[in-house]
Image 1 (cartoon, one colour):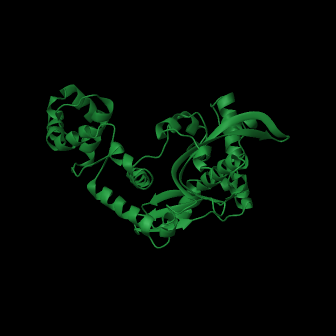
Image 2 (cartoon, rainbow, N blue to C red; image 1 turned 45 degrees about the vertical axis):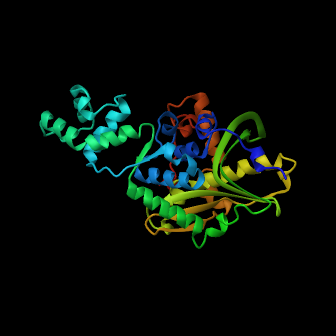
Image 3 (tube, one colour; image 1 turned 90 degrees about the horizontal axis):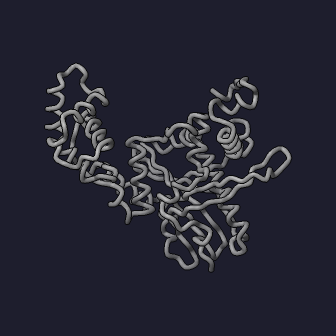
Length: 342
């Protein structure tokens, strides 16, 4: 029995992120923001993203949790939290907050535009007194992501629901069975040949994917990929999020890379590759179900650009300049409007 790991990259997550290859995130951001996504870092950030990443880590890479996150219950008001976070992220001070030079405090307060009508002396005093414990916690969590104890406990509860819930326990229950590989966070790369109107163009570009879970059933020759999603709203609002964030791109790209890796391998070429399942956990409902994209291809062709078309545009813009949108270059500055653009 050949391990599916032989088709994957044996590298760390940081090494994966440094790979010069196109991934789902870039394709999705480009589909929503156009050329701006290629020139600016507009990755999604915020408490919801942090919570989702924490759940992901607890499920797929639990041993690394303490290296990545710092759990703390220090309360601080949003304004002072912003100032302390700014100081920690822009300076190298690791001393008591009272030892930070006054000019650094003033610069951070002004940069955060906090309480503009207060006297500077009052603002400094507030930051020093009310931000002391939070600053101490942030220093202890240097190079880590701070999360509250409340969020951590809720993440643990949601992880339990994901692995032991009514509709998903059968997925995780297969771990350890003879002839079955249950793999977390496998990194893959595939060199894709670009096509034009006449067929293969002879130009190549690397694609990459890091897949949360891959189940490889060697007994029945079946491969099933999974991606874990968390949402702060109701489970069934995920249907809207699926199209808003273009998870269809993720589904198609992951399956494409998996398919190409398998068909070019003598052992895995006869395996059946099933469509990716999205395991979706709702923080609002504290419930979990799985989703699968069952749309016919024509639905996407009529409403969205295919990932391969987005890829073609990205390659063109990176090669020919990123001053204007792709359509402007192709149509000599004339961009056609379409009702589907709403």
